[in-house]
Image (cartoon, rainbow, N blue to C red):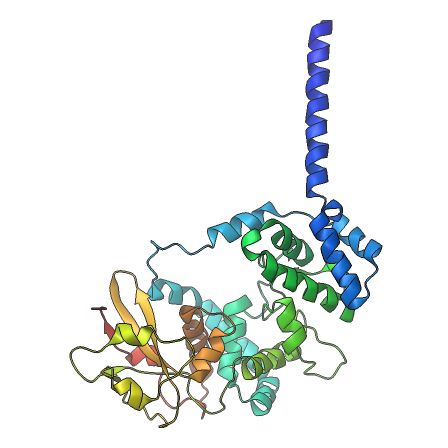
Length: 359
């Protein structure tokens, strides 16, 4: 190898290592001004030692795979929603069997949660089953790294995730958990119920009285916390159904106008009747309702009337399809278990609801 070749290789290596060092410096969160500003706010609000907290950010890893997944998750205006396909992911034999096992093992705790919060067992079971198959899939991504990455490297959701990050840091201190010791979903959700950090702090309950809230390993706390969330944030109404079937009072129901109403139920059945939509179910005169649409791709759309309790489930996840899956998984588990419940006054609405094409 001649002198010129050696110099060329040396120059290339220097440039490569220099670029890597520069990139590492850029991605070192502890050196960034926006992170330092955040750390200062944590010191001012909660008394954190700034130097110690910066050390934690010094070890944080930027997760490009999380940023890529968030981009992939952005709404696609050309995507045709398909309730049948979505439903098949959750209302299936393996998940139903796991739900029966979970219910049998935790029957007393589920009953106690229903008595205290008014949320029926089948709904609690449905949520935990849809979220993680009863703790089987809780996520393997470092939560601190997720929240840091999105808070400081994903502008579209930066403010939201800075709040999650703040809540998580406080949560970790309250529960004596090392910041980088917790794993969760790529979105930063934690434990069997997939609570975000603020929901853990706001709605997590010590349901077995052991002096701490553990949503990763303690099923009693998980059950109590899900019920508490639905009652407090969702405004759950005890002994009220989740959905009702739809029937049409004329040949030209004003479905589009009803769907333009707010997601939170705001109309009584009498008011909905004025749009040519009704139900043969027994519905209280003062109960507030909303029309729920579940598109089926190129096939007919499914419609049901959602109660305040359907809306409560959408406070957990705003997707109508998610809420309906929770309802149907829960009722399917209940049926498979051979139970009956006074909290359900009719068969699952999706079995009898009307399918029509939007006009």
